[in-house]
Length: 313
Ligand SMILES: [Zn+2]
Image 1 (cartoon, rainbow, N blue to C red):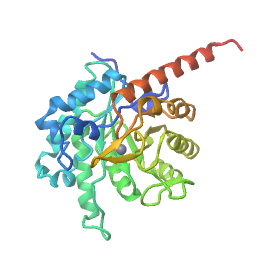
Image 2: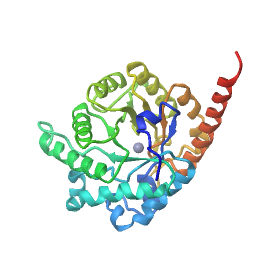
Image 3: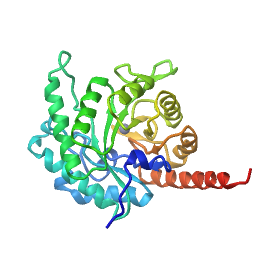
């Protein structure tokens, strides 16, 4: 039997962990058409999802995020898959687990935004959104997810509903991950709804998140991610996770392209570790090659740190 595995928020007290890279852009490369339902592939093309996640596991990821970003009833309903919520989320966890091939790894059940606005600004009642998050969180936890990651969040109201859903479902760990945009004058960054890292960190601490994170966003390169990690670390004692995009999206031949190479992006890994990041991964446009470069930079840094600690004083 597998030895008792530490909860993610406890494991990161031992050493920083490596996350994975993009799923959405990898699904496109594997043949998913823009606007189609990538989460349904957990049921219709599980081997393709598994192949992507296996490459992340082989590149050295300690954590793999399930292919369930749009796996809530509200999101799946847009593709006519509302009846598949439980099956899509269960399969998402099983595929990510299988990708580790029996070695120790943490499966992070992905919960993305529900994709609309709540009343009075939009059409969705708070109760509808709460029920959708609860249903997804329960399916992910029942399937054995080691943590839930509530990601690409911009509003505290929606974040709170999803964190509560995770807590109520009995998730061993709940990660809240905000998407920041660099302001037009370049002086700082905040979410589309005007939330800054200090406010997000304090809010997540009050509402029961175990790890505070950032992912995606606009203009949030590795250096901006480092700044966000610093600001989180000053605002909270909770562990911090960062998953920046592989550069800025560019439109090339009517396709969205992210062009920061592994060599470019990996330069930001040690600064992130020195800023105290506990989990490093990457978001849109990143690939297994990015994650492999991250693994090697992290291992080198951690070995050096261990040696420095052993030196006589
Ligand atoms: Zn992204």
